[in-house]
Length: 301
Image 1 (cartoon, rainbow, N blue to C red):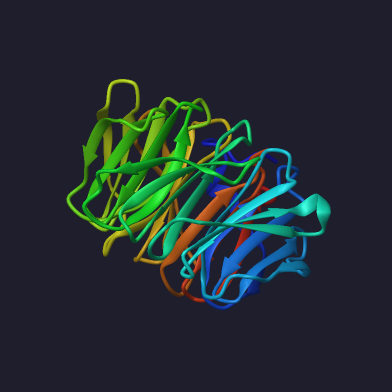
Image 2: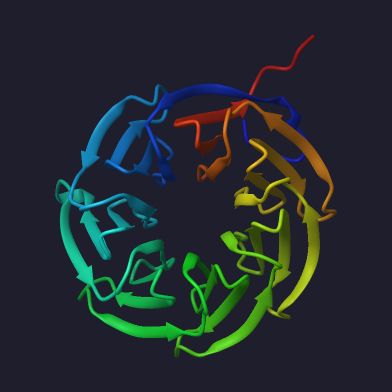
């Protein structure tokens, strides 16, 4: 059953696994596999039982972020070893290593057409890469601190956030067209499925919704005491999930900004989350070293 604003109060945990320090969780396009990155590399888990069915090794340090293209054949990863790696999953995980960042690479996103990669890191830069050639095509500079998150808002706009408390929107020519501001470190951003809205999670304890076209804040949510860590839109764009240092997972109506439901089950901050493509499951990764999967449970009598 699809998770929606009408049934989100019926979410239950359906499975979990322990994976050590977890940096990111990403679903395969068909929802059958969950990719998880951590200090030891990248593992692929069967979505039903969260049993390991594959593993990618190569980074010489913790993996900070991962992304999968819409075909499910390309996985991009970035890490503390300053490298960007492209893994061809159709060829058994054959990898290419892209170098250019001068410090830890913290964030990665793949453009919708699968032809471009955006990465951001501790060297305060965002870099755009051609996926086919592996060549860096643009260097985006402007952040005054470490870049901790990147995403694509529509195919022609890259959004980034970082330690300087700002979110920056970049055109494909490398120019920064809009700057948006939190009061503290921006930890995570997520674009709505239609590319019109951007959600951000910050150390200032707020989650905010921004109109990308107008470059304006439309909703401010006092979301997580101690700081917000992650945000994710449901595939229909009507539901926003957030998580943070208070160990909670919260669900909000995108239209009204109202709080719909709160889950308090993890034992430490919830640092990453992702809906699967059809919206029937939500995966969360926490500092308690668990990955958990949530789905709609049966209605009680």
